[in-house]
Amino acid sequence: MFRSARFFLAVFMLLLASLACQAVTGGGLAPAEESRPEPTRSDESLPATLEPTPIKPPAASKPDLGFETEFPLPEDANTAFNFGDGISFQTGLSLEETLVFYRDAFGAQGYVEREILTSVTESVLSLVFDGHESGKAIVLQAVDLGGGTVNVTLRFEDI
Image 1 (cartoon, rainbow, N blue to C red):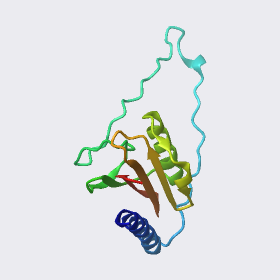
Image 2 (cartoon, one colour; image 1 turned 120 degrees about the horizontal axis):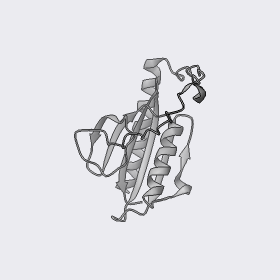
Image 3 (cartoon, rainbow, N blue to C red; image 1 turned 120 degrees about the vertical axis):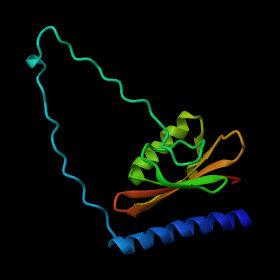
Image 4 (cartoon, rainbow, N blue to C red; image 1 turned 45 degrees about the vertical axis):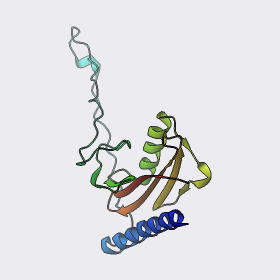
């Protein structure tokens, strides 16, 4: 009983934080940036002796949050805190990008989404993944705070 009450309290607090932030910032979404066409370069302009060299992207690195976590994190994770069985942080990813990021990351680790508990709206998402060695589920909740910021909470829970 206490665990489910704690879960609903956490969801309620996230919703309140979302509404408060929208009230302070005037609500709504930030305007989308105009897309600009990428400059093109003709390979014909290169001398015949030069060939394009593929560039390796930098290795993915975990952001330094001031504490260690086993949860995968987007590169721009910031304003984080650790609360024992979980963490909370902010990211510039949209809710949709957050959803894709964690489905890919947890799927690659062999976790299975418990789809019956998945909830996705315009401003909030909630996912549960099974398969962690502890036997606990991984609960992900994210709230769009507006202004290009999403608050993400990840925790282990017996569900």
